[in-house]
Length: 426
Ligand SMILES: Cc1cc2nc3c(=O)[nH]c(=O)nc-3n(C[C@H](O)[C@H](O)[C@H](O)COP(=O)(O)OP(=O)(O)OC[C@H]3O[C@@H](n4cnc5c(N)ncnc54)[C@H](O)[C@@H]3O)c2cc1C
Image 1 (cartoon, rainbow, N blue to C red):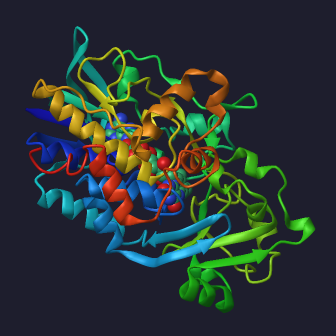
Image 2 (spheres, rainbow, N blue to C red):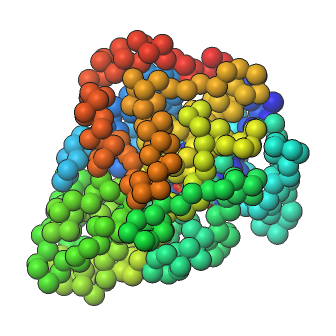
């Protein structure tokens, strides 16, 4: 049984591992020369309800990637405005650790493979085709997972944003995102808000070396630096543009909020460089990602696949999806959780087993169902959902799903009959 995962972001990595653990032969195809996708420039884990979701997945025996991350943290259990008990991984060193981990588990990782088309037989995909640099390639399989994300290609960043900001996805070098679900004939959905399609990614990276010694010391010691802005330095309205609603609170407009992820993660979709350099300590600031972070950022949440709660894509018999492709879910934790379920169910479908739907007594199960239902209503596609804040974290608290008590989480997973469900050969 062969499963082909397209897209090597956090969701594709999790899907590949999960399918492999269920005995499938797995190929993971990534169009660039690095795994992790937007996770190459992220780093924030375990903030607010993400802690609960992480521990749920660990209790379900699906937490190996979280364990690799936990072993590569720069800061643990830190607070920043609106967020508690966050961990920050080192973005500079994360990717090879995950790549080696997956390779050791037997995942066949193929880099610089950009899938551009599908071969169908009725409602089933039989193979995906594309290019590996200058060579034509074809990968046949029994089930497929679309983990291509929702960022780019540059035409979308130009049409719906401020132009290509030259982000880590490097579309000009490796070719832009191509959606597998769309190629298989799916009518995809877009995030929409106030008449705008998609949303700006919500953070940039500054070279730490370009900041004052005092700010660097605060970042190295505490992981966080909050620097107040003067009235003439604030960019009013930029929070409304963000994909990450969990950071759309006043503190992020009134201050420069920096987090230490190896670089200085600037919690703003963009910030004109000349204006930023007027803030004390930022006189020599320079962007590391996106290179044109003074001007804009990548546009995301374009091309999400309609799917059910097992993460099977509607209308295609053997196609599953994870991460942002599975809906308006923001975050690495969210991508790892959905990717794990997609990989598991892709393997289950080939064994003629009933698909697994996670119960709503668990935050992960509730989120997957809730986001699907919300997305059916077009007016809700302006919202973004994450365990870490905004509307979904509020829902977690209302439903009593949020807790940092690891024993209580393990007990809840057991009560739902889900303990160990993702273990090898389950
Ligand atoms: C700047 C930025 C900062 C962020 N910071 C954080 C953070 O600190 N914490 C957090 O939790 N979340 C953060 N996020 C959000 C988070 O990164 C994403 O929501 C999540 O990681 C998405 O994972 P994914 O696998 O669904 O998609 P992606 O990360 O977009 O991965 C998709 C992958 O598919 C590949 N691909 C696309 N098309 C093809 C094709 N046709 N063939 C082969 N490969 C293809 C792409 O190259 C890419 O590697 C951030 C996002 C951005 C943009």
